[in-house]
Image (cartoon, rainbow, N blue to C red; front, side, top):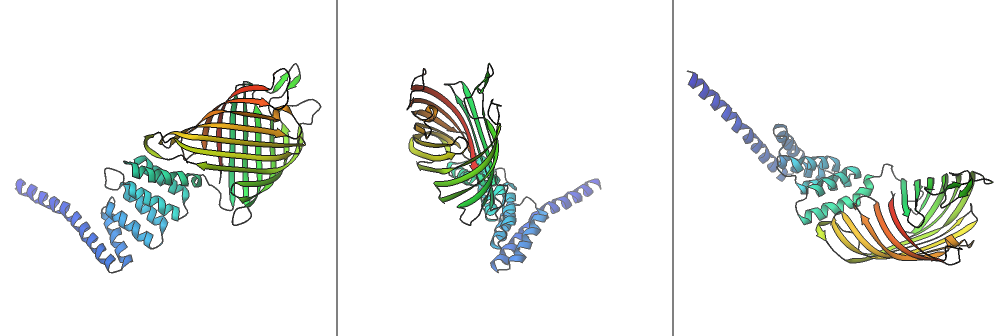
Length: 390
């Protein structure tokens, strides 16, 4: 009797185990029939019924994603593709992660898109899928940092430089909130917070020794970019000197304006599945002319970099370059009138983040005689730059 009961129970359990896949198969067949007949909503319901019984059914999630996409519901499509990427599989489906990323992008959900591309890059198992995921992540990562709705935007620039010549570290930080005034994003107004200091400036025997400008400021301004490489700007600010220098007001106002140009050419850093030595040439040029009301001085700068992409692996890039830098001012101050040149190395730890580390050895000459130090100088610069404008 006991054996008979056990046999009956086993038969019931075995039948139940076989019944579920059978029902899933019938529902999938119904989905395909309805889809061929153009009954898309009924077909989608069949897929939902499949997922109610088998929540990890990859084929159903994938098909449901394409259904949502065909109906223009990109967000729902992206979520379905994301579920399909890892549902019922030992390995993550990178193709589905990429599909989820593009769908999120089409839905204007750029942070979610960037995360999908990041997951695809991390789970890529071959060079082609890695390159596609890496490039998509690289170009959507700036949008991931966007927290403001257009026409608003934010820009950050941070520059920390160690100068061996003076055993000094200079830090400059600017945070700007801007609003575009036109659809082509050529004209904007902005508010700006700025901070700059260095480790050497101070007082010796009650006498100030100034190696760099030290201040905090708040200001407003406007700029115009008739071309991507050309910018005109004007701004007014209120400054507070970090050091209380005798016979000098600690709080001062400033008005400044000018123009800057930037142009780059040659090979961009690339995503590489394996380590590579591309040895591809690139170059950059920068120039600026600015009037600073605080000092009643006109300042000019021109810098040229010509380099080669030395090494690339995954999202890391190492480059070598030669640099020439010229400074000029209308007051004839010797420290603002010089030329310097030399070699440098540039390291980008990750192409999806705006961080660059530079090491330079520069040989310079002042146009005018500065005194006992002489006109010629050498300087090693270690510079960390963080900057984005979104």
